[in-house]
Length: 246
Length: 211
View 1 (cartoon, helix red, strand yellow):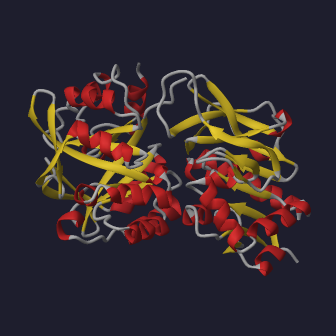
View 2 (view 1 turned 45 degrees about the vertical axis):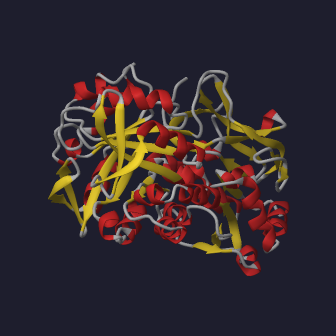
């Protein structure tokens, strides 16, 4: 029996507010992170990811307090990303109550950081957050600093490398689709699905149920959504039902 | 007099979530590892995520392995969660053979269904049990799902120590082990929503009954 695909609520945080942009830019305030997280938990979401939207850009990390408060009332896995740069950053995220950390910029700068993290904390704790922009047919470049900077890596070599470095999961975001509500890039979904031997989370772009259903033939493990939940366009149970369709 | 539930502090594991979950049902939850913490504990929780060998080394540093064995001999309730469950067993094949606490006979082996699969198994999965009147599973329904995240699992040598099983592709494996008052839980009850909290609550009740 294949395990059911997970539904993850993604909450981007800036200065203690939930924000949401388009293509990871043009951020708008949409609410309080802990209130939203609690609501999504009560409505049956499988996991929550808090992303510090500007941490990688300004080299800082400010989510600890939010996570710490969340773990007192929310009894599902919590992932934290944004500005995780060192083993001590991981330790502090875990001590605040996070179960996993999503690492992007720091891994692009130094891929062995993933290895270091997975050796100390275990692979299950180290998630590679990969942001990509399309450059041509079946060709995507990996970006860092919250989608601002192109890296030297193309998607397929980067997927291979992060697996080799001991990542336990991948969260893949299409910068082209992020916040657009046009659906996840299907070509990207198929392309990455074939290349990932660890659980794969698709993130960004979901605007309606048909976007979820159109991906039912593709092998992936979890879907992360933000806008559709924040703006109450869709509810958690209907998305989970759509994820279950084979 | 034995008062608290002791959450073992040995530098490994998602301590904060476990503390928060147990505190919902028990006022006196203590994080610690000192002799006196063991002496006054009515029950012991062994948390843990990560690699087996690393976990065992951490336990041995302060002779916590000996304390845990003594605790078990006195028949006080113990619950190991995830890696904490695996370490209750005799040995593990993760990164070469290494010895465990040997409180439940059996080995920790890699999860390997015949069908094409990914590891780690990160999923919300149902558990099945033939023990309907088991206090730990009170209030749990067959359709309830629990959060699993692991690549290895513990296989008890004796089938009577398997309290519940989880199915991952075509592979059915032990996800709750029980031997007397020693319980091991492969999934994370503290991360499995309201249904997970029922298991936490049931274990607290077991600790109080035993007291």
